[in-house]
Amino acid sequence: MDKNSNYEVKDLRLAEQGFLNLEIAESRMQALMKVKERFSKEKPLKGVRIGMALHVTKETGILVRTLIAGGADVAITGCNPLSTQDDVAAALAKEGIKVWAYKGETKEDYYRYLNNVIAFKPNITIDDGCDLVSEIHKKHSHLIKDVIAGCEETTTGVIRLKAMEKDSALKYPMIAVNDNKTKHLLDNYIGTGESTWDGIKRGTNVLVSGRGVVVAGYGSCGKGVALRAKGMGANVIVTEVDPFRALQALYDGYQVMKMDDAAKVGDIFITVTGDINVIKTRHMEQMKDGAIICNSGHFDVEIDYKGLKAMAKSVKDIRYLVEEFTLKNGHKITCLAQGRLVNLSLAEGHPSEVMDTSFCGQALACEYAAKNKGKMKPEVIQLPEEIDNHIAKLKLEAYGVEIDKLDEEQIKYLNSWEEGT
Image (cartoon, rainbow, N blue to C red; front, side, top):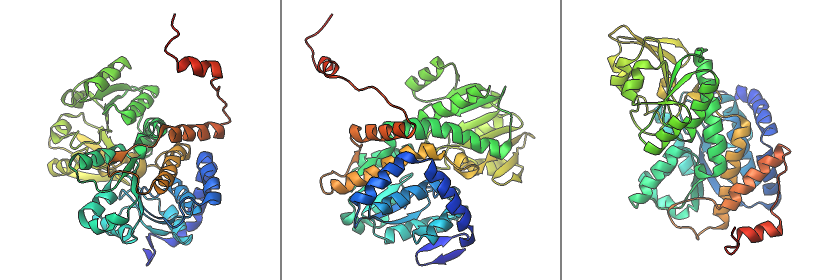
């Protein structure tokens, strides 16, 4: 490990490759570059300390640079022990950015790094999964008076925040960046769909065509994962607890069944629910010999990984973060990334073009928070629709796409109730 008071990373010698990867990301994040250009001129974040717990990837590095261009002082750590790109962390450290992260963090280091960011006394927090917010509320409540607001990146984090709000435990405003339309479309639906299969393929090189793929959860992420499995020729099965989403899956052409039934017929299992123990030991006991299980939800709770280890006769490391468990009935199950995010553990996460819109949301949420300091209540809030539409417009411009505008007659018609057939 290389470290001083401002950073702790695996190896500073990786920085050269990190700079090259940051260069690639920047070239594909044209919308965020437009935000950065404006931020550089207007400095809307001047004097603001921003503490971040995000996946330390090349795309996140471009977000960090954008916030700094806006005048902010930034400190960052990871939000998952297996998702840091060590070369990017080294590059950020070389740039003088406060960063504490490495791939394969111990639980102790993970929380020590979170507390390093908290000791930075942030005025705005950016979270992916709510661990930073939770830690501040539980152990550092004296700092809350100086927090303007926070921004949350994931569905899992928003679920936790709404639980805090319901219990009257949330003490500063949280902007649910995850709930932006642009975030749901690109990050959850398109990004998770592509990057999940990228991780599975890199880890196993398995043939998907003709296989039974079980997708647990049919929210935005599950829809994306299922669609791409279908595109590769899989026989897709969806498990759900929500009647409406189950009906959607059925009408989209998928089989819908309980996990107890799907466990017997599936070949590849992917959880994207945000809930705990979706794949239980009883399900794994029923699986075919050679089944593959993995998770693309934020936390490592969706697969009962501990239960799998406890009931297995033996465990073999096949390759990095790919384990083969032999059960008492002789069947073998391959588990990817210890049940953690397969797309960031075994692949590189979402493509830069996807994170372009998500991180426009984060940057503009920070600006919104700074401009509305003291005006927001301690609750989960959503960015105004005009900001979300602005992000979509920036992305369309990056692709060179022009769209129509309503003329005065059309605007008048849409705002009138008097005209009928």
